[in-house]
Image 1 (cartoon, one colour):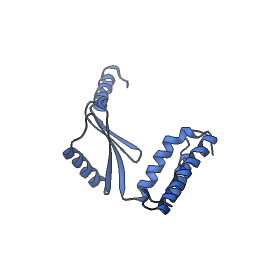
Image 2 (tube, one colour):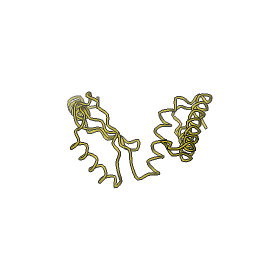
Image 3 (tube, one colour):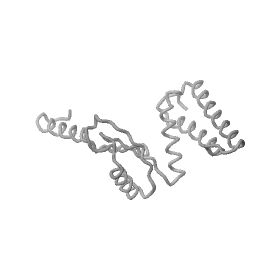
Image 4 (cartoon, helix red, strand yellow):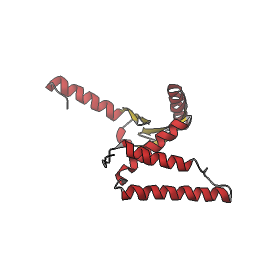
Length: 156
């Protein structure tokens, strides 16, 4: 295996080791035995971080988190979708987005909401590592590129 920070295989290995440890316990603990298991899981997370540091792999942390989420998504019937809008969604819009996504993905959806005024309007969705950008900012960039190509014969 390479030591490249972009190597998804190493990130997946770390994520799978965390999944294996997590399956040994159920959080939050409700009795002393569960608390002992939770503490063991937290120590496994710490050990994984120490291993990553000793292998100079802390740069993979974002990838490990992503792989961890992907593995969990593949083991459950609920997909986590990051949803970015320019302003906070109200309950009606949130429900409409969830229903549309559940119909399209044919599974339950958990929305993780993010507000980013720089997108100007519209919505940006991140689903299992894929990004779907229907923001006003992206549409304006597409118009800009099309106009530039029309007048200057090449992309921006």
